[in-house]
Every structure is written in C-alpha cells, then in structure tokens.
Length: 538
Ligand code: ADP
Image (cartoon, rainbow, N blue to C red; front, side, top):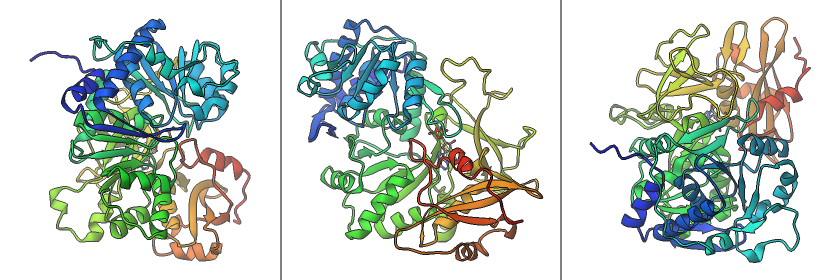
C-alpha cells in the first residue's frame, strides 16, 4: 500500500476537486452573511499559506486565533496547519489573566482576531511581547484609525497581496497541526497539541454512522465554537464528507440560530446543553417547528434528561449524547442504540440514550478503583475512567510535569463512570466533584439532573460540604425560574423515592445565579469557595 501521509490540507484539496461547488455560509462579526464554495476556500487558504511564508512563519510555529465560527477562521485552520505551522485557537471567554498565560505559554508569533475582540486584544498586547503581528480578520476599512497594536494589519489586505498558486507541502503525518488549551474547570489551562494524523483519524471516526453519521447530503451548523476543541472536529469532518457548512459567527442566540437553521436548510448541529435549552424555550414560545433539522449532538456537559425528552417528543429531533474532552480530540463516546435494543420499551431505550454512550473505534476505555484495579462492566460499579488510543493525548504541550499516563499507558480522564455489559459508559461525576459520604460515593450529576426536572428549577448544582460524621454531605444549590416559587422542603420531597435515602441533600440554598466556566460549564471550584465554611444543621 502507498504510505501517503494523512494531512489536514488533503481534506480541502479533496473538496476543491470533488465538492467544488458545495457552500460554506458564514454570519460575520462585522455584519451580514457571506457565502462561497469549498473551491474558493481552498484558493484563499493557499493565499494565506503564501502570506505566512512571506511573514517568515516556519514549521511548528504557533499562530493564535481569537475568532468566532466564520469562513476566515476556517481558512486559518487550513492555511496554518496546511503549511506546517500550528493553529492555536484561543477561547476569548477566558479571564484576561488566563488569556495572557495561554498566549505566552504557546509563544504565539502572530495573532488573528475578529473585530469583536479589538478592545480585548488592545488589553492583551502589552502583556504578550512575543506576538509580532496582530491581524484583524476583516477588510482594511475596519482597521482602527489609531492603535498601539504591534504590526497591526488586515487579513483581507494580507491575502490580497498573495497568489493562490501554492503546493501544500508533504510532511510526516505526526507533525503538530493545532493546539487547544483545556477550559480549566479544575486547574490552570493545559495545552493539548493535535497532529495531522490524530486529526484525520478522529475525523474518520467522528463521521461513522454511530457517531455523527453525516454525508454529502448534510448541512452542518456547529454551534460549538471553533475555539472549543476544534468545534468537536466539525471543520475537518465537514470537508471529509463534502457537507455544506453553516458558520453562525457571534450570533449564538436562539432567534439567530433558528433563522440560519431554516434559511440554510441545516440537517445537523452540535453544541452544549445550555445553548439547546435556550433554543427549546424559543421553539416553545412560537410554537415553532424545524423543517430540515433532524439530529443534534449534545456534549461538553451531561445532557439533562428533560432536554433529550423535549427535543425528541416535542420537536422530533434525535439528540445524540456525546462525551469527550480536549485530551480526546474530543469525541470519546456517543450514545446510540444497538440492534438488540430496538425492540425495548421506550423507557428502557431512553435510559440508554441518556448515558454518555459507547466508544467509537480508535478509543478504548476502562474503569478502575482507587487502587487502579479494573472494575466490572455491570452498569453499577463506578470508578475512575481511563482511555487510550491514537487520538488521545499522551502529555500536555510544553509541560515539565511527569506524564499523566498510567504505567500501562492509559490516560486518566478525571471522570468517574460506570460501564454496562453492552459498553454504554455513564459519567457519574468528575473525580473532584463526587461526594464522599461515609466511605460511599454520591453522584452530584445524578442529583442535579433530578433537581432540574422540577418545573420551578432553572439550574441546579450539588457540591459536598464538610460533615463531622460522614466527612461530606450533599448541598443542593438552586436557581429558580423567574416567576416560579419552590421551597427547600418541596424540592427535597420532589427527590423522595427517586434516590437512595442517604443520597438526599442535607440542605438546599437558593441563589440568583451559578458560576460558570468560559465554556458554560458549572464552575464547582468557585461554588465550593462561595460555600466554604457552610455549616449544615447536624
Ligand atoms: P475541562 O476538562 O477543562 O472542563 P474540556 O472542555 O476538555 O475541559 O471538558 C472535558 C470534561 O467535560 C470531561 O472530562 C467531562 O467531565 C465533561 N463532559 C464532557 N462531555 C460530557 C458529557 N456528555 N457528560 C458529562 N460530562 C461531560
């Protein structure tokens, strides 16, 4: 067989040849919709590669992006990785100290940013001395009249000066292609460096029928940002399958998304639960229906059962619950039924669909106890979740710390899970969030999912608070829906019969809002700080 290396630029080359007229549609930060084809994207990605060479960018150099999902960001994915440099997507929602840390740690040489982020980059630039040029992803007419940004230039002007006659170089498929820092739910952000090989293998795996199952008839709109683990691989798997790509830019509110779903005939989408709750409310207000949308991936955080049920029963949309992390590229498992489950009653099917699901080929997983001993796959025993495979990180970028892998080469996910006899994995908690009560573990996620099903609850979080006898007991923290009322006693009564009596939270507190990470996940480290010193009535 030919030993053709797997390269990211090969995806766009393929589309320019075989899906030349398939569209990429983007909503732009500077306003308006932009529409062009894969052939045009290929041409501009090559112009960009020429520009990067002219700016002295070498193989392995890191180039930062602070940008929404748009065609220009898509071109950067391909132009940067394609010429052998590393596309470092940065999450603009992080705190400014984290952004400075990340840009300096990655040693980004250039930084491309959307117009929205001009005020932000003006604050960052004085603290990021290694960035040689700050390039605004817009035409020169949008450049500010005055600015202190070093080497400030316009993306469109940069491309206009270049020809599109560029041959993508061939190199070892293990060459680094892109870099993402984890959102830091638990620690300082850590860099995960992907390779051309890992990205391509992940794209094949993510395209499989039991994963995203998409093809050249699909229209994909990734709500998940391109700065959040490469939009879960969609900017790569869309060209791999010749799908039309719809990029929503900064407009992530329900009305703007719905407009694009309908006008561009989107069939498939992906995002975190918070986004879909907003959309659900908007759909109910109409009431509205989707004409073409059939399926969506929910991941990044546990999919609340109420969300899956509402989309399925009220809107006829298949939700696929997926689990992953930056370190797994990110797809690890997706919950789809096997043939033998199709005759099960609806409730039994639902019970499987709401789990985090089965591994896709390329990922292997195990659960182990505190001593590292394997636990049975009986759907009951829960322990630390380990994964390994060709698109799982073996280490963090630029770290001096010892490897995170176990002696037998497994990556410790930091999640706690069960695995059932059919291979369905179910996250019961993050290892740092699980509540350890009298030597037994209580799943904070299970309690949260039950609480959120109460009609007066907008959001719920459960944390462990110190207890003299049991070492920790659960505290339920709740945000009520506007114009709804519920007491602590009513909420606790609502949980009765749904959980083992000793799982029942010892107290309920009501708050106006809960702290979230930059990617919209509950920030339990902050919540634990907010409630440090909390005293239970013992
Ligand atoms: P961070 O680890 O900094 O939060 P990631 O974006 O990589 O950054 O998040 C990965 C984590 O998100 C997983 O380890 C897991 O705890 C959580 N997660 C992702 N998907 C799911 C899911 N479907 N259900 C429950 N937790 C999830």
